[in-house]
Length: 93
Image (tube, rainbow, N blue to C red):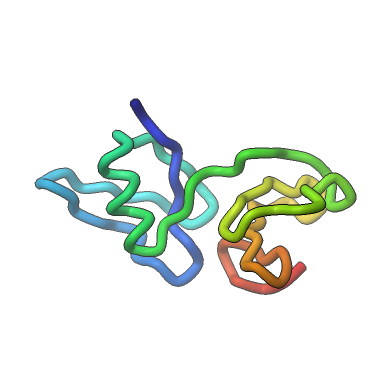
C-alpha cells in the first residue's frame, strides 16, 4: 500500500529511510510505501490532503492534523486543533 505525503513547513525536505532517500519540495506531494510514510510523518511530514474545496467547504468538525486543499487560499491546510493553518508556513488562514 502507498500513501501520498509532503513535507511540513519546518520539516526537512530530504529524509533517508531504510536506505531510501525521499526528497520533496514544500507544497509538492510524493507517493511512498505506507511504512515509510509513518517515518516521514514522525519527521514532520504530513499526509496529503483528504479533501478539496473552498474555504467555506472546509470540514466543520475536523480531526487534529486533518488536511484539506483550500482552493480559495491555494494551499494545503492542516487543522491544528484550534484552526486551519497553511502547511507550508504554519499561518492560520
